[in-house]
Each structure stands twice: as C-alpha cells, then as structure tokens.
Image (cartoon, rainbow, N blue to C red; front, side, top):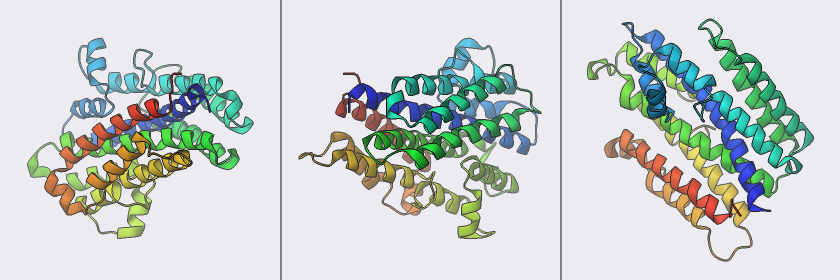
Amino acid sequence: MLGKTANGLFWMYRYLERAENTARLIETGQRIALTRLTDGDGEWVSVLQSAGALDAFRAENDSVTKEAAIDWLLRSRSNASSVLSCIEAARQNARMVRTALTGEVWEAVNATYMKSREVLARKVSERDLPAVLGAIRQQTALVRGMTHGTMLRNEIYDFARIGTFLERADNTARILDVKYYVLLPSASAVGTSLDNVQWETILRSVSARGGFRMEYGAGGGPREITEFLVLDRRMPRSLAFCVGKLRDNLRYLHKGKRTPLPSLKQVDQLERLYLSHDIGAVFEFGLHECIQQILDHLGQIARQIEIDFRFYE
C-alpha cells in the first residue's frame, strides 16, 4: 500500500474518533456543571485543557465561558479539532482514499458530513445540545458499523483500526485526567456524594456505565472505576483494550518483516511499563503522572507510525 493511502486511512479514522470523543467531552463538562454547588464556568477550563484546545481558545477569546467553550469545541473554524473541523477533515481524507473504501463506508462518511453541517450550521442552544451531541455520536457510530460490516480484514482495515484506537486511548486518558487533575473543587470533596456523581459522569462519558454495573453491581468506587477504565481488557474504551488492539493491528502489518517495527516496540514498551501492573501500583506511581506518561508515549507512537509506513512519500 502507498504511504499516502495509509496516511489517509489513519487520519480519516482518527478524525472521526476525535469528533465523537470531543462530543463526549462536551457532554462530560455539561453533566459535571450540573453537579456544581455554585454557578461558574470553571469546569470548562478543564474541558478545554483536556481537549488540548485551551491555549488556542484563549488566543481567540477574552474569557472562558460555557457558551464560548461549547461553540469552540463544536463548530469553530479556528479550532482544527472542533467536531465540525474533524468531520470535514475525515471526509477530505476519505475522498483521498475513496478507492480503498467500500461504497457503504463512503456513503456513511458523507451522511455524517451532511448531518454535522446541518446540526452545526448555527450556535447550538443549551436545550438542543443533548440532541446534537447524540446525533454526532450516532453518525460516527454508523461509519464504524459500516467499516466492521463491509471492509475486508486486510491492511486497509488495519490502518483504520490503528487510527481509531490510538485516538480513543488518547481520549480516555484525557477524560480520566480531567477528573483527577482539575474536577474536584477541593480535597474535602473526595469520597462525598459530589465526588461519586462526578465519577459516575466519567463512566457515562465513555459509555462504560452499563459495563461497570454488570461487573461491580451497585458497588465500586473511584478505585474500581479507575481500574475499569485503565486496566480492564474487556472494556472497549479502556487504555489496556485500546493499546492491545493497537498492538494487534501493528502485528498484522508486521507479518513477513524480519525486524520488529519501531512503532510496535514502542507499543510493547507502553504496555509493559504502565498497563501490566495492578491498580495499586498505578495509584502509588500517581494517576495523573501515569496518564501524562501514557499520553506522551501515544504521541511518540503516532509519530513513529508515520515514519515506519512512510506516510508522506
């Protein structure tokens, strides 16, 4: 496969996953705001920070408000990672690799693009926000479903999966970091009903609440939730699950090569260093510190994948 085609597939699926994840991050911020005992827009600073968009937002805006933050994350043309920008970029990459996609996947991408332009044509009101976020998640899920249902399990599929799971792991890490790094209003809130509500919100934001309840019932607190989202290999948005899939698909692409790909070595190292211990070791190291290390490793892996498969040749 040409590096240019691999690049287009990788980024098409990264952008689609990023659009969905940004919608989930907005929903997380919205739910957390409802648990606040006082008025204010402080939580949106942490949401923007999680999305990696805070500096760019402040360069364009005087202050952080809920309305401005949501509009920036959803539809701002100045934000390359806004939902609308990501979906447009995904469609542009899909056009570039059109011959590598089935007709069903191409039609699903086009439908996602048209729906996002429709619902994000103007600033979204607070009343309409849940429906808009739901529509975005539904449309990106449609592309994912068509990919699973119609694409051959070959190197094209592998690059699609690599882009998806690299982006998803990054997102889960960022959402967890928001909770641990800036969400709680004070140390005194740890273990209170407010703390529990916010952890519940984190589960909802990665569609993990149902699975968590199946595993832990009505019990399970912050420690169990963290273990579920970091180390549980059955949970499709956990860090361990995403990195495991990333490793598997790189191994498929590695078949027939004598020496291991540097990117595959980096994934193995990430698993060994941070995802092969129990949750006690993670907390002892420091959850925030662990997540920051994982995010750094994911960034390095993404850059190495570009080099290994000659994306720009």
